[in-house]
Image 1 (cartoon, helix red, strand yellow):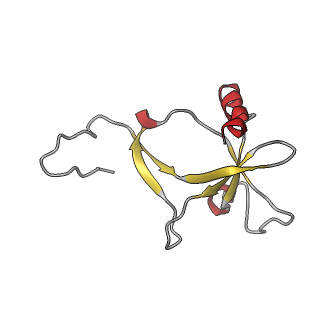
Image 2 (cartoon, rainbow, N blue to C red):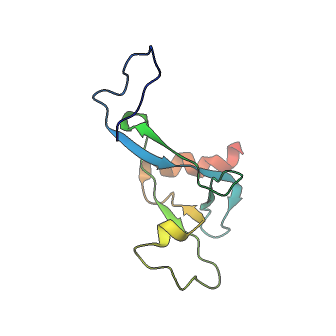
Image 3 (cartoon, rainbow, N blue to C red):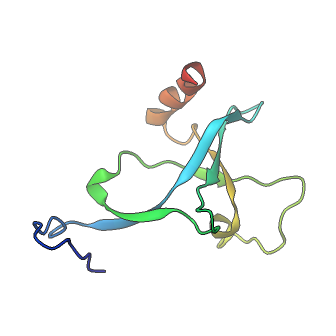
Length: 110
């Protein structure tokens, strides 16, 4: 991939490692037992996913998301494609101790 810069601007992408990220939306909805936050894929009005290519230096912390399975699971899902086909995810605050406290306090803020 080679980003194209605007005419007359400095080539700011040179020597940067880039990554593709997808956007999710969240509200105050949490699972009652585990208190995990529900995330939904952000989508444009035409149904396509919202994502962007950004420098790795803009990433703050890794997070663990788990597909939200309902009472019945889509039979097409496998361990290899469930992250691609699922549209709702649980944000796993128990995965990393450095995000546990901020996410546990999130309900007090919102």
